[in-house]
Image 1 (cartoon, rainbow, N blue to C red):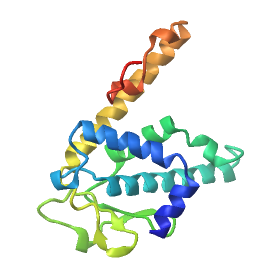
Image 2 (cartoon, rainbow, N blue to C red):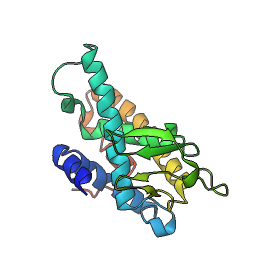
Image 3 (cartoon, rainbow, N blue to C red):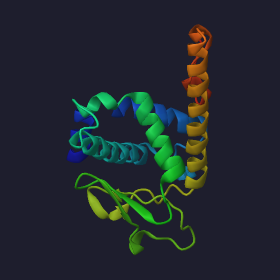
Image 4 (cartoon, one colour):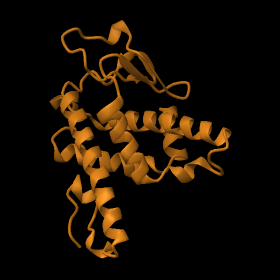
Length: 188
């Protein structure tokens, strides 16, 4: 409800990032909760959570004098995509951590009420409007989702490095689209 609308209004980068991630998941048949994937609402909550944590890190750097100015200047779409893929593809501890959106967002120990002994690695995402509901539990194919995110992260980093080398050699026009290495991008 209100929390989501407020965040969407104050953070214009969410919509394009969410659309990109939904398309990425759709190309891999991992975008539907009823198939064990990450549905739109869950994906949105994961994006918001990532942004909450990213902003906290940026604010800390700003307070320490490492960066200056408006922190949103560091929230470009490419950086946020890589951060999202890194968190949810490589670093997030699905077995033991629960995502909470309230109070500025935080990661907490997965509560026993959200644990499933038969499936310990499920995504746990507490509903911001009802803390008794886990909106991530339907994503039973989260291992496949995580692998897809991790692979995309590695591929993007590799292609960024290749692009930088191509650009340094004066062949930027031949570098192609970095994003097309993880999603289908129609030719012009």
